Length: 222
Image: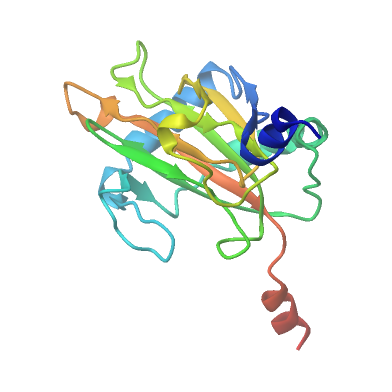
């Protein structure tokens, strides 16, 4: 092995783009409009968004969430495309259970780099989805979904300094949805909403398809 080969094998960090499935005009104008109005009307149910064990940490995540927001029409539409998404991302979502919430970002809100699952945190999550809603024309700027390229060999922790990472930004376009693996490192870029009105926010329904809870199954069997 030459000195160059040895240096490449020990020091080089190889980065490959993370696969993201994105579908625009996902529900259609009428259904997306009705869902947006329900989201806007949910203002009294919103609470500060949390991380990990339901901790409010504004230095890492700043937004508001509604955990019990119902969007059955979205779940039905996801069911229609999940087979193609499974094939593209190389994951099986058979017998999974959905878990999701409404998340609202207004002026200055963001969510720093994180994973949706790891061996220690929410390992049952098999597939992440994010569905975007907002008034048109878009009353805010920013709020892109930044998905960081994967380091090889694959790591569950960050590798190197964040400023050395590479990524792709995905715009939060109204009535669009993205799917990706929960192990991917990603963030929500800061939102600039000059009017600061609730109805002008970046609305998103964030969720996962999760494997069944084995403890719940055991309780049912018992």
